[in-house]
Image 1 (cartoon, rainbow, N blue to C red):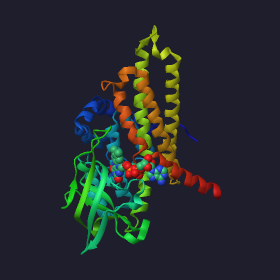
Image 2 (cartoon, protein in one colour; image 1 turned 90 degrees about the horizontal axis):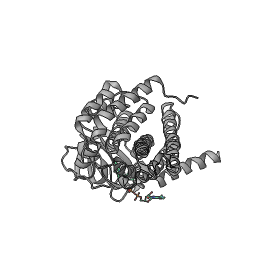
Image 3 (cartoon, rainbow, N blue to C red; image 1 turned 90 degrees about the vertical axis):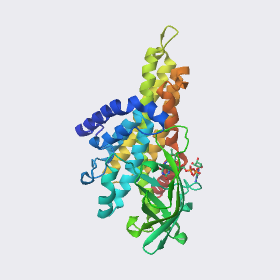
Image 4 (tube, rainbow, N blue to C red; image 1 turned 45 degrees about the horizontal axis):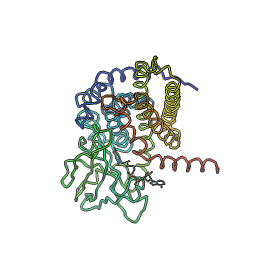
Length: 383
Ligand SMILES: Cc1cc2nc3c(=O)[nH]c(=O)nc-3n(C[C@H](O)[C@H](O)[C@H](O)COP(=O)(O)OP(=O)(O)OC[C@H]3O[C@@H](n4cnc5c(N)ncnc54)[C@H](O)[C@@H]3O)c2cc1C
């Protein structure tokens, strides 16, 4: 058993951190205020493989393992939750399924563009009336003259306005239950597709989130991603891996808030000494250090299992559930350590607290993670 990153992983971590410190961190408040990512930085991301973390090199990606991919997302989250979420969704929700199920022709058509740093990809699962319960999603696609005709509405779709193509979960057979769903690659310039203005959100304001209407959108059968009727199962597999990334993002946001809190605690004086010398503050610092460490190890373990080709559904759900709840506690206490200043938009912990709130909702709520974990545990313990 090894508890150390390899030399390559450490070097990659250092390079991504340096990039984040120079290109992302100084602009995080601006990204939030303008409600858009810093495209100047996104365009430089291909140099570090950030826009194609696990995409093969032949399509412009970096072909990294899942541990390196997690490291990258953690580093982005440490400095800017919005950038971290958009890059995580791009890699895990758009690039990964395209690599996993794309035909050689689809990969050649879509992946080089997606990894270019000029655009970001998106996956549309959620609907206004169906999030956790995806089997009740209604967006339909009916086959007509070699084309699927899509009608319906998707909601809360990250990166939609930056995407040349949106992988869309549609119902292709109403009577077939879980076997009645399919993924379609829908180019965003298709007639009948409307991307609505960004949602007004509590946090992650630089990462835009959109409702999308499909009004008789036609895509050729060649745009089926994977197998007809396998869309729901492909979605579950995609989300398993996505949860490792949301776990990593949660660890990153927690780490960023923790560092800010420690820095502040050493400077702020109360009752004649820096507050870092008061035991109550030290306990918050100790708890944060402990929980971040545990969460990171859980993320790495889930990533390692995935890289070994072993089952990782339960471990990914555990890592995401735990890390997102750690981020909540660490950011809460980071504000507490800052006192009134923590409540001020002048200090980054205020933004981090709002940003982390999504982590226990997106890509499966904490309740859904507990269902996933319980099902696996009960299965394992009955055999
Ligand atoms: C910023 C942001 C970005 C997002 N990006 C994307 C994206 O790119 N693509 C995409 O498809 N979606 C995206 N989403 C949607 C997100 O994945 C869903 O919001 C999430 O899965 C929860 O679904 P819901 O909001 O419909 O909540 P609901 O499913 O309505 O759940 C409401 C509450 O009920 C609980 N609940 C539901 N079912 C059960 C149950 N069986 N047992 C116990 N409790 C239950 C939930 O845990 C939750 O607390 C995004 C959302 C946000 C806010």
